Amino acid sequence: RLHTIGRGSVVKCLQKVDTFLHRNIGTNVVAVQEKNGFKSLYAVQAERQEQAERSVLISCHSMTNEKRFLEYLANYGDIQKYFFYGIYAVVEFANKESIASLFEGTAIPGIGMETMMPFKSRLLSMRNLDSVDLRNQPKKRLAQQSIPINELIQRLSKEESIDQQITSLTEAHQLTEESCRLRFLVCSLLKDIVAPFFPECTIKPFGSSVNGFGKLGCDLDMFLDLDGISGKNATMPKSGLFLEYQMKAAKSERIVTQNILSGIGTCMDLFGPGCVGLHKILDARCPLVRFTHQPSGFQCDLTANNRVAMKSTELLYLYGELDPRVRHLVFTVRCWAQAQGITKSIPGAWISNFSLTVMVLFFLQRRNPPIIPTLEHLRDLAGPEDKSVIEDNDCTFVSDFSKIQLESNTETLEQLLCEFFEFYASFSFQTLSINIRKGREQNKPVGDPLHIQNPFETTLNVSKNVNTTQLGRFVALCQESSWLIQQNKTAPSRGGTEGKATITLWGVSNLLLPSQIEEVKRKQNSSKKQKFEPTNQWIKDMLKSMKATNNQQNQS
Ligand code: CTP
Ligand code: MG
Image (cartoon, rainbow, N blue to C red):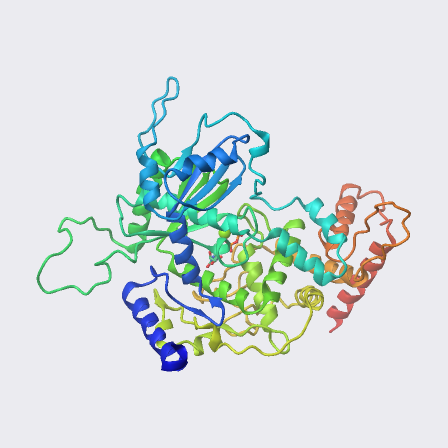
């Protein structure tokens, strides 16, 4: 049929349908963009949300008989996909109706002296199903955490080139298909708690869970989206029915957000199965409810009315899709930063993963030719359907990947990693600001030691929290790593070790070891009276070379 009516007309027709669906039904549509093999983040999210709604999370002990378990559940409908992790299983049915029939057969347990809260959720537990049968145990229980750093270092040392090390590091760290499904399922389970109050709401993951830069075990940032509630954005009729004349009001949107999060937070605390350690952090610039979802092990941050963050997630996702080197470099730099204690899992005066990602993006924009375009360029390519202004911030950028023409840059991952360290080892942080909107350094406003312009809220600095000490450590570690990687670029030859399995650390593995320079400094500080001499020749050489570079920089 494509041949008879013409491919062009079909594409035009589909584009019209696409625009119509986008305008009229917003983002709750599975249909949307899948152009040139790229899926938009909206399309991915809609697909994953729909899968999650057909899924349940079941606690089952580690000796569960897999065959019996599946046979039992098959009584309620066709199983599309399932996997085991820890003591849990995620089961996705082919149809949503299966969940309803599953509920019909479930009982609320009584435990000893305690009385249970009679709240039904899709978090279930399977008991006394069958006796243990080792042959039928689940074959593979998937890990939700990335491999320990020592194991990773060993693994990377066995690779043959730095490019392979970087690819291997990404594979070891990135979110798996299952982890991604589990993240959407947790959002969907939480939505069930909120839905009695806001039936048309959605809870969407954002940040590293979906932007393509998520590491196994990263936190789960969630956004309670109330925009889709019908009537919210409709024009007010002169007469007729309004929703409720006694609707509660508040003085500002911020207070409404705080009230909603506070109420929902209380419900999650009281009724939410598996939601523990809940804190309401409502005075933050972006109010949130923080808790641990025990069955998944995710540290969760639930926000509302946080549409700009959703946009920056979409932007990061787009950059990651444009060129595979983007993700590889971001993963490697994030892993290096974590190993060196530049980033930490708790908030503080250190550089965050988000800031670090923006720094990598900026570096890639500054290559010659650039590997990724500037945000201004992406805005210029945007069509009318992409227009987005959120609280006076221009968040418009192109969503159709096929409109983006990339320049031909053939730099290898090894070159890029080395250059990244060099770039920031000598970046003039005192005077310049990092700006991915323009893709060029800008003069820095006075104040913060590190200035990275927020891509959409342009008056904000995403690294406002970073102090001089932490920035200094980052620069020193970039200098050290730049030097270190130059010295250890080639894999050692493996032959002739007479059967001994000795592993020599080299390339990226070396970058993940504790900093030798910091070690020297620590020892010097702890024995100030004794004159400390570094024993390793390479540390001596490096200190000498760094001294020379500093002298040169001071002179220029
Ligand atoms: N964000 C932002 N401005 C900031 C901080 C965060 O716009 N100053 C947005 C970004 O889209 C970011 C998301 O909020 O991706 C979540 O923030 P955070 O959890 O701090 O970063 P992640 O990218 O999720 O990284 P991590 O894996 O460390 O959680
Ligand atoms: Mg996060």
